[in-house]
Length: 185
Ligand code: ATP
Ligand code: MG
Image 1 (cartoon, rainbow, N blue to C red):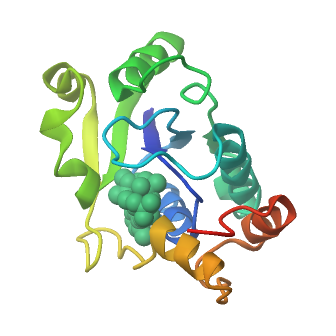
Image 2 (image 1 turned 135 degrees about the vertical axis):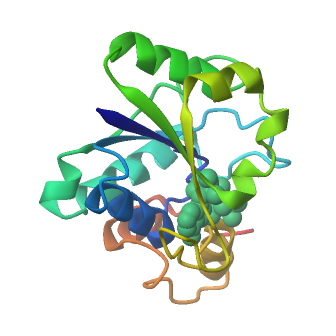
């Protein structure tokens, strides 16, 4: 059983993330996927704009909007947003391996995230525990054509009152409007 671990800020989750999630399962790159919004992303220069609660809720809404055969194999996890202190992927991997000892954990990340993996907390140990699946961004990947969408782009468009229907799942956009998120940059 190949269990994908897909972490990110998801501030907010967007259609590029959803496209990737769908491809991973459709192509059998993983059998199941856990999507984990990060609590305190110590590697990023700026704090997430939306709260952990809101980012998790948007991930849940996006997962609910996936086709039913895909949705059944994806779940959103609150483990990192509830963890005190800085968030380290190694802690999440160890947690998953304890709960699901039969699973091979596959760490999913974009090429931008992968380029700094050597600096991650206990990176050598982390890399010894997982298989890494890297998706090329801003260009054509070997396995998955990443959509050229980022959360930054989505946040900027929202603040500028531009149309984001290509960038965001409908339910996520409704949630953002209800909660008045990302109204300013
Ligand atoms: P920001 O613009 O705020 O940096 P982002 O769009 O890069 O946000 P993250 O939450 O940082 O989103 O990304 C989480 C993970 O998803 C990272 O591994 C990142 O490389 C990957 N990712 C982000 N956007 C895409 C995309 N369009 N296609 C494939 N992977 C993506
Ligand atoms: Mg990014």
